[in-house]
Length: 370
Length: 156
Image (cartoon, rainbow over all chains, first blue to last red; front, top):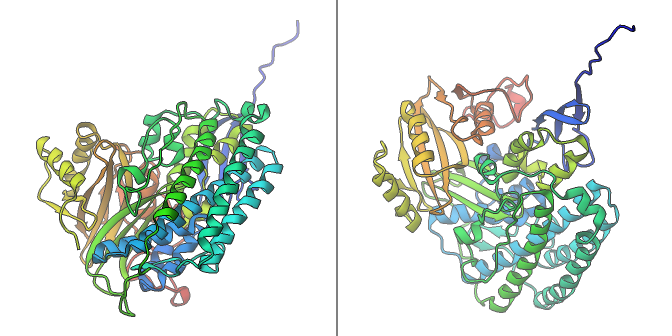
């Protein structure tokens, strides 16, 4: 009788990244595997650390908006507006109504652009190359609109303390309305390409589920939180800018799986279109910024403000001390929490699903590393 | 400049009062959120009560402030029901630089505390894995300290 030999398999450590096409920046995931199943995951971050919080202490309120755009370059409008809003809130500066509505308009256009970028690259992560080109084509339309206003396509330096830096050119409204008309059809195109695609559905359904309680513990926000059925949207909960005066819905998911997060973002794009249209209809005339002295000084005080960015709650905690630079600026970014959350939800999943799950959180690494 | 409590801030302050939590006087920040000072010894006990009795499960933000004579930890807690922030602050003298961890109360604090250690050199007692997070493991200095130079030419 042959001797019985115990067959053992050993775990394997796999380094995913730092240079990996699907990590949207530079992220390293240390995965411990048992066969295909993930036993543990350790994210290693910091490859893109640029010391933005230190820079904030050494640059004036006029200089820093140009830097904060680089904090999160896919939603540069959001971070710029956030910084300006913090300073305005501490100093008690009233922003003219036109600037408030223009900021709202730009934020929503930026949200669509960011979701489009996510859509294209996410499908790319899953192996569907074609949609990227459609998504980029349509994102281009929004970037053209931004270029028309600010002259920049990615890093706008649009908001400044006291308002916005550029007024709309006369043709802007017509171009935005054209975009709205085109884009509604384009969303239907995406839905027929993606949402009804059985290969895609097979890939994302019931993948990467987590409970709302778990998500709250890790302070997950944005679509990853709303996909679990929690209606937390700062635009509704703590209305800022003109969001209390526009009509829009906050879509939520039910299962908290990857498909829900995809559907949510598609629904959000439709809602953003509604907001953009209302902003255009109601855009008041008047000044685009208040007149401030050349050296902007903010009195001593502190404020934590947060906006609902396409990725979640992006917040800034500003402590001012009466000089022309802030004493401390802490940037709270949703992706930081989402990467922290990743090991929890990857546990027990298969390696082929890592990128499907990670991509669905819409993490962007420059924001994590600051 | 608003230093009054906002509507949600007032609701939160009222809830704190009703539950008789051991928190002192309330102040308001410029956004109208209530700020409470708490001593570091009581921080964990107060944190547990805020979470379990007031339902503040959501830690939005956690950071350190450096003042000339003390370190100050700032905890921004979000209330999902009342839709407002509550701010907890704890201070210790400069030479101590040790806070109790809140990672077991709010798991989200884990990386935030690591970042505070990374940037300020403040340590957290009981933290499961206190090591550098954004900077490389062999980095020597704590760059967000006020006496840290902006450029590295002076050496770090």
